[in-house]
Amino acid sequence: MKNRVWKIIIAIFLFTAISHTTFADTNETYCRSCHGNTVDRHHLLLPSGTYQCTDCHVMKYDTQNQTYYPEVIRNCQTCHALTAHTCMSCHPQVSSSDLGLHSSMNGSSTVDNGDCMTCHYMPFPMVKGAVNNSNTYFCADCHTNAGTGPNKSIRIFNDKKHGRAECMDCHVADGTYHQDNPRGSVANLTYVSRYPTTITNTTDCADCHRAANLDDAPFNAPGGGTHIDNTCTSGGGCHGGNTFVAAVHSTNPLDNLQKKPFISVPTLDYSTVTRGTDVNIAAIANFTNSPPNGNALVDGAQYRINNSDNTQTILPWTPMAASDGNFDSLIEGVTARINTNNLTGTYNIFVRGMGGGPAQNPLERYYPMNGDISPVKSVTLIVQPQGGYINGTIRRSSDNSPLEGVLVSITGASYTTVFDGKYSFSVSPGTYAVTASKQPAYNDITVPGIIVTASNTTYVNITLENKLTGTITGSVTTG
Image 1 (tube, rainbow, N blue to C red):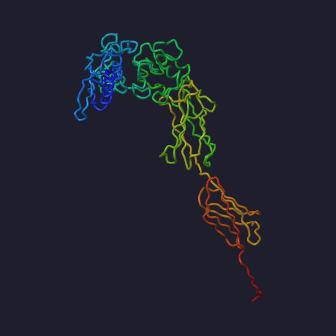
Image 2: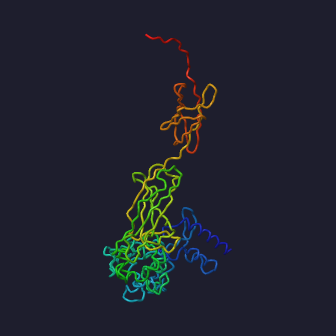
Image 3: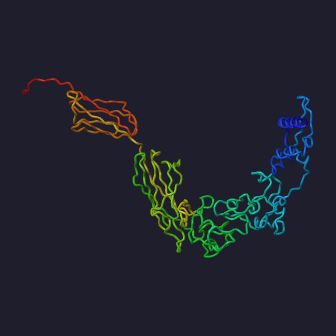
């Protein structure tokens, strides 16, 4: 009997817990941001005999429904006294190897709560998207003069030229205490490069320019072959002759050389084609003004298709191929094949060459160094619509035999039949009128409303009637 009563009470509780919910206060929201919904776990204590419903829930009476219901607890502190949770109490494993230079923000090299609170100045729930400008200072707040953070770093980077000017483009947390980003952690002192080298404790140019061909934005990082090593920024003077950190934040690639490639005016194998006919485009990209050491190579080329007045881009910049199969020299022939299936009209075809080192991975696209793009050259392509045909035979009415010497004409074209009486016109899709004339012996005939569709033939056979004839008799005399 007792078990039956408790089952009824539990059933009432489960039903009324839904119908008597109230708005969750901040205490419940805060706790559940880490602990989740713990209702099910708490209710497991009933079958074990540890607790009964009334140990936690006060039974209340609903005067409207005239039933009892257990009060739904919305404040976790009702049973659990508030515990002062700190950063390190939940993340004790975080060390200086995770935060690097940021681990000394609170005065010592040991990571403590103060280091975390330097950036996370307000509490936030442990859910995705909770870290924002209302509770956290980001890179630009402390590492640029325009930032709003109170803790200005001595490492101020206001002139970030290497790709897009955003700190987070390189320093992106991966969800595990801000470390292990493949292109350099936020400040991981033990970062190991991804390419074979004896340098194992720093990030340098080769991480992007030797081991990978990264996407166009924000890095613009073509491969560099064995030319790329840890001396890029410290020796030779090509890229500022400074440390990696200074170079990547304030130096353009080849900034003291300012060498750009050139590209020839493109050529087409056909300047006018019928829609559906592929067109080959070719050009020559070169670095005739390359530095003496030959490190600035042709790294790629692209073409673009605009309409005739350049108010619309039909095809955005698209990679071209090296004629010899690889971009690896100062002069490269570049080619592409244009599909005209969806084109009709007059178009401007633009090309441009791009400079850089040879790409290491042939499966990756080629991209230019920042600013190393040639002036653009162009050529015009005319694509005519696919046409149809008007064919037929001209015959005489008297015996239905083919008629030679008949002038057959349509708008813009004409043809004179030979012994077989046949004619043929290749025309654009549309509506035409066909006229057959053989003067003075036959009457002209015009057949209007001839409809021609693409890739189809419309037959128009015409029979000419002889003009009526009579006899004129008389004599000719002299005056």
